[in-house]
Image 1: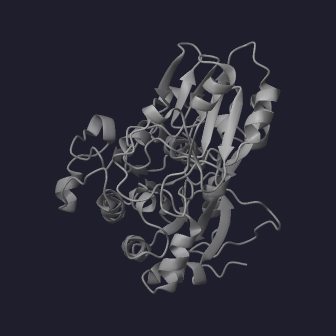
Image 2: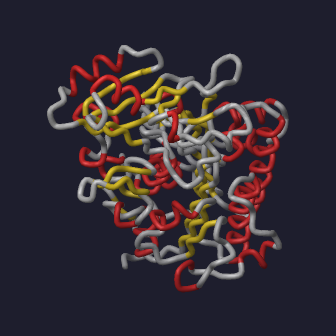
Amino acid sequence: MTARNTPVTINERTYRWPAAPLVVLCIDGCEPDYITQAVLAGNAPYLAQMMSAGASLIGDCVIPSFTNPNNLSIVTGTLPAVHGISGNYFLDPDTGLEVMMNDPSHLRVETILARFAAAGASVAVVTAKDKLRGLLGKGLSGICFSAERADRLSTAENGITGIIERLGLELPSVYSAELSAFVLAAGVSLLEQERPDIMYLSTTDYIQHKHAPGTPEANRFYAMLSGYLERMDALGATIALTADHGMNAKTDAAGQPRIIYLQDWFDRTLGTGMARVILPITDPYVAHHGSLGSFATVYLDPGIDGESVATALAACAGIESVQTREAAALVHGLPHDRIGDLVVISTRLVTLGTTAQRHDLSGLDVPLRSHGGTSEQQVPLVFNRRLLNLPLDRRWRNFDVFDLALNHAQIPGSSGC
């Protein structure tokens, strides 16, 4: 253990000790316009205050613009090429099986959270869905639990028990805005009672998958968020808000899903069994998106000329780019061994699937909204403190949020300059 208040270095970045309790929030699917519209409508007064009296930047998330790679980039301060999480789902080259990338063994570096805890900080993590808990809590000595399984907590595994009784809330459905509200309510309660030095809160994009910015349902969600943030501010916390990805409609003018079924295309073009399409958006929560996103990787038979196939696919309507493994790893900072021979990204209003028979869209009760491509890359970076001494003309990323909050946020009570 290092001396408390000594700067902590992790993954080639150095972070100052928090001068006040730090709350970093990842608001899942938070396209920046959600905040803008809620503020303009007068639904989110504290968010408006943060943006005017604190700081508001626009940054880019990592590609693929999915939940797991971005949450792990945020808590490691690095690209997927370093931390190893390239999607929610990938093809294990050792077994040939498609697996969820939610086991902590897939994470290749230590998190900022674990390193601060090892240095003597009290750290708490609350996620909406349990798929992230193990990854975010890898090596962490502290509180770590999901709202999804808040009824199954133990001191040994989660560092806390009785959170449902403490909050006086029912266990929320995984398909509800209440799941995110539970995360935020837990965050306020932890600040009041345990008062961790660092807390990381990660919500769900249930609302964002169903409702566009400025709609009454979306504005109600951000009004709820604004209220919880105001309570955290009143408890003296430094607040840093970002997102794992944005969100876009993926439909035609009539509201019908726009889908390119890549496995069908490869089977027609190359022959059955000559290519295998992997959709890294795949997770257990298919009612959100039907496993349809704007990013896919493709494994080709060794005899296939990847360059010529990429050229042919890139010419198809709705395809933004097709890159070889080498190019995609370089351009997007992806782990070379956890992507296919090709990486495919669709245009803003189009999603990618495997075959029409494999996608159950019966759970989509509203027009499809999803993410994964570069069109969902912009995310907010909002702080309740002024940011000092920022470098000019820098491309901000969501995984800069701990650096900005710990190294550039004005220390409470100081005049700062």
